[in-house]
Image (cartoon, rainbow, N blue to C red; front, side):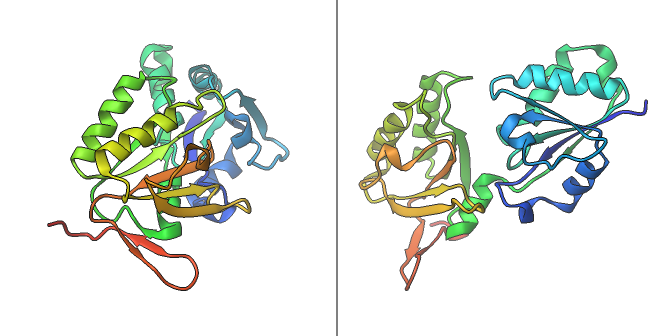
Length: 249
């Protein structure tokens, strides 16, 4: 079978954060499949067909990519960040599990990328330096009750927490409720980081506390990190540094 499928991460935004492995896959590809803004990050060239689709069409997109590969195309499915973190790798495997049995014989690879979570952490220091968890705050694919349960349990376990998809125009209330839960569970002095569009010209990073945080500090391009009880702030001239020690009491 001549076709193949590679599911890749384009990193958080800067071309410098795309891995050489992913760059090589894109250069060899005949087709790129993904959400329109991510497909647009791949430069057009002769011999490459770009297939952009809407954000909520993950399974259909995955099925399209698998079928193209079955027909002999060299297909790259693109995500931002890392494809295995709230992105297209899981969607492809979900489609593969229930779809055409022939798809299972395909050469399928997942090529990792630099996640927004790791880029955001690096932008301020090392707030994820000890145990941490990562939660998607979108309730499009899971109920809010489950999100709130996980928030409370993560706070009780004293993890640092990284949040994807905190707030959108269609979900303006969820992040306000998230902040309320965290204030109740963690207190007002807990450090919180709002890292927006990291590694792009629009990058904006703000370090504050839960007591000072407001919902409008986040949007869909913002990665939010809440520290644990151990997370520390180092004041200095210019931007402060935030880190969580590698050891715990």
